[in-house]
Length: 393
Image 1 (cartoon, rainbow, N blue to C red):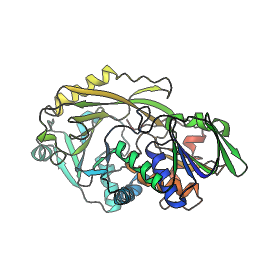
Image 2: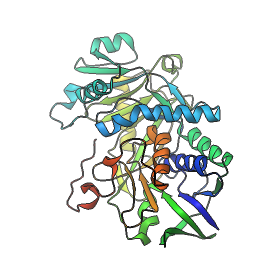
Image 3: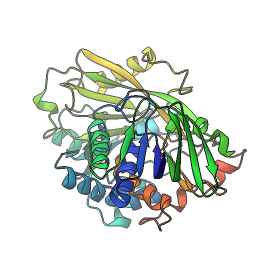
Image 4: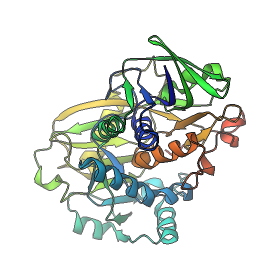
């Protein structure tokens, strides 16, 4: 049971890497998933993720436009729509954020990157925001940034499309097959499962919250924090007002950082909070939503988007797996370059189609098509035990 390449973990990043490897190598590529395909135990679940050119850090701004192109390629090959453009808002409540450290996570940080990469945008004050989208209620100190290319990437659909395309190129897929260990084996890798040991020339580990368990026998342990995050769907009765053609995706930077979606996937709107969840582990996490966050969401909706709300359809949890600097990990192991490791730090899905290509490049020894030095596995955030956590919350 030997393969040219094996991908461990078939969530957003792993399924994309499987497709890109199969597209280049053809048969001889294996994808392994410990649960059923499309499971809800990790991070790559649900219908919707925000995709945006709006980035406040250069290392991500450089990848934003190429990510759109990568999704275009997947849609063209599959004939399936994955990205829905709705336009997108970044709204900064400057009164609520007064005194809070934000670094570049503010309107000026986003516009600086837009200007650097030649992206068009609009700046709106509070009155202009409400005039254009009367669904919002504001206090007057808000400033908004609108970018027309923002929208929704359908995570569950995209994962399934990537797996289907990989199979079309000859890849084999094994679900419900936990990987117990990966072991460097000469210039290759042994991948140990309950179904047997598979050998590969190259392995990509995209195991998210299970990364350190999978890597244990390589001698590598990354300083990753697993956080339980949460979203709520509201069965709004005002469907037309929150249709994707009439209401954009948004991020609201105030005392808390919320993000929201128009009606998509469910007959409901969706609200989440970026970061702020309880620390947990992949195997001990609870699936029960946090009532304090439910109440916090409801208070935000009542104050700023009253018609967005309605009866709660459901709330659900997912996992973020985050390095101390909240940056991606996209690199090969220094001592075992035949093993490539990916971690999306809880904010990678918008880039998943592109990251799949970058991981294939790394695994096959090609120069990555776009700059990823910032995501090195040897950077201080991952090697210095005294490196402070600096999460954007």
